[in-house]
Image (cartoon, rainbow, N blue to C red; front, side, top):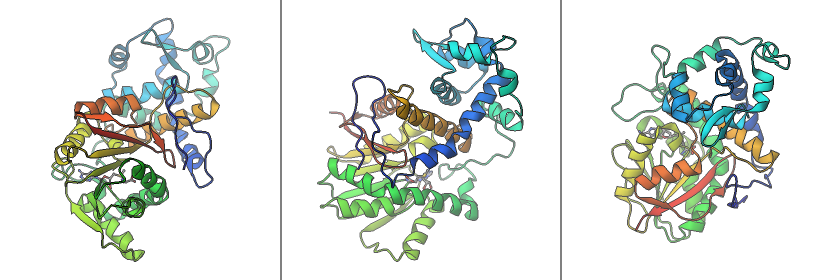
Length: 364
Ligand SMILES: C[S@@+](CC[C@H](N)C(=O)[O-])C[C@H]1O[C@@H](n2cnc3c(N)ncnc32)[C@H](O)[C@@H]1O
């Protein structure tokens, strides 16, 4: 397993030896289209011209552009990693390099070249950043009584669920190994927003004392976990299936997994899920947040590529979830979970395919 070592400065995760089984670079290639979209949006908005010689706080810049909070969090982080924006004395400024290359009308500007072919996709992104969704847009996920979602359209939901499960199947063992390192005595585990049975099955193999793993999902997601179990003729005798809304309540367990699910929601909804978990867990319980982690600083080119991939991924999530979801930094996870009464326990552990496991226990 590739274990992330926390560092004193810069980003807190070091990623040196990518395993051959890790599909990270393919995900990164898929996601880099967001960097192209964001660059073209910057040129369309004339952002470099607008900000030249100025510095703005995050809220001032957000107000000036008319972006939602979640859009500003996501887009500004991506522009930092793309080295178009930088933070000086806590305020956003255009980098000298972007000023040199992306302004209008200067001899060194390549804006006329770089903005060729910009089209409807940029208009759609700018609408999303301002909180305007296309008419009749249907959310990907929602709570039980919050109306129709894409997951209610069985063929599309199947493609999404099986697509996600192909990733989960491959990070399941490194994730289970990380969980075993923190919760070797756990008897019960709940995988919240499980999607597939792979992680629960891997934890049943890796945790010596685990008697039972509970899959928690809405009925429109759980049906694909059952389909995988049937098709692969898995032994499901130690699995339990809890169909329900994680915004209402979650079952009791010693260790909770929330994998690739926090990023589908804004901080208030993420907090509701975390509150429900805290209210159900024993005092010595643990929660493992397993997520792509946003990072806006890096120590070398390898880390910069990862930071770019994660920031692009954040924009993909924002688009998929109609402006609700994004990637959060470790500091943001710490802050959101702290409000729900959790404190970090142990360093981040890099698993596979761009995901990192963070462990939290109840505050005393
Ligand atoms: C992005 S998937 C993550 C799946 C899996 N944990 C992984 O790591 O690949 C989010 C999961 O949360 C489930 N979900 C979404 N809203 C939910 C809700 N309100 N209550 C319970 N599960 C929900 C979805 O059906 C889906 O399986």
